[in-house]
Length: 299
Image 1 (cartoon, rainbow, N blue to C red):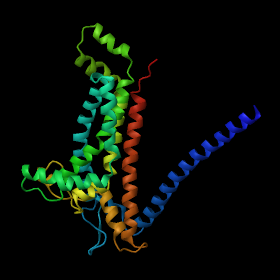
Image 2 (image 1 turned 180 degrees about the vertical axis):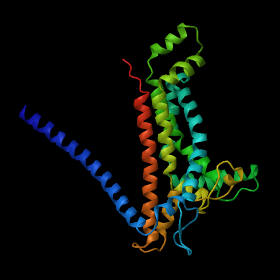
Image 3 (image 1 turned 60 degrees about the vertical axis):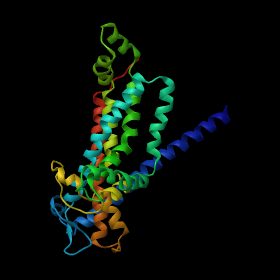
Image 4 (image 1 turned 30 degrees about the vertical axis):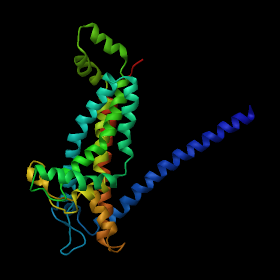
């Protein structure tokens, strides 16, 4: 008994240290971003950074307006969400409500394989195949463009939306479905009127997690959308056919450039990263609130 208690205590201490290490690493990243961001804002006005419409940290005249990068990031995210959310949700409904156990055991692992493909492969796929295909539909499309990047990022986040939504749908008790059938409702009516609303918190959480993944995507967007920082309008169809630069692509460009580690241009990398961190944290906070607000507990 003493030896067993000693082992359990050792495991308890090990798990506590692991959890503490995770929190410590997270705090270290946040403090590093914050410290270098403060250094950047000592040289560049926050108003200029958040409201400026030109981004040129390495070429004179220097400009540090992050709006073109934010606009490009949001544009790709909106396009990716428009593809991944409906496809992912419908895939989850099929796997949960229509597919047999055998079919589900085959299709779900195949769907989740998409999440394991390296992002650089997605980027090359978009550049080599999706863009030429789109050029047949839109002759004026550029080699690097927002539409191609949106399509490939949307394909990337389908597994996140589908897998989490499917788990949420399957968590709804069978008794609720049977109650709907007992009232004479058809299967489609039961799914959209009972099952989906009952799993709403998990479904919305999957949407927001997928969007967060799209916001932070780097290599696929860099390869497919290019590195041309410009202020775009999502409501203008022509802007979807032209190159842009996202926040992550700008960070890659600065990180690979020859700028000094103490220069303002290098510090702007951390300012972009901190802005991106705030955006993703806001989305995750909204996801957590929705999950807690609409959470259903079944027995």
